[in-house]
Image (tube, rainbow, N blue to C red):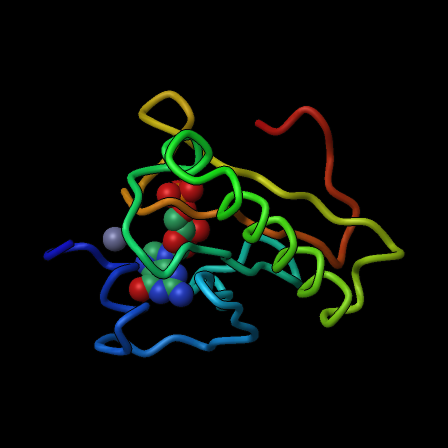
Length: 114
Ligand code: 5GP
Ligand code: ZN
């Protein structure tokens, strides 16, 4: 989709610190990390949000989770614990309109979030 930041990252038009890839997904470091480990996992193709991925292509939704699990291991936060977050829509606090899952870890994460 034109004018989409994460489509531009997926296409290689905007640089990102890419940590892992799978067939149809990409993982890169968040530019403004909220924890020592803060990775974004996105489908390479444009979907507006994670529910849209799940509805259109449940296999791809699974692929995003599988890549998140691989990255958690790679980043050393699989055993210590970590959090996956999919902010969705206005009240969910989504600021980038391309589906993404946050992987947060490397410190104790409080609950509930603010
Ligand atoms: P949201 O608020 O939509 O759940 O998450 C969007 C995330 O994208 C934010 O955590 C923000 O820091 C991150 N972000 C925004 N612009 C860029 C960018 O240009 N590069 C990277 N790597 N992350 C970005
Ligand atoms: Zn996009």
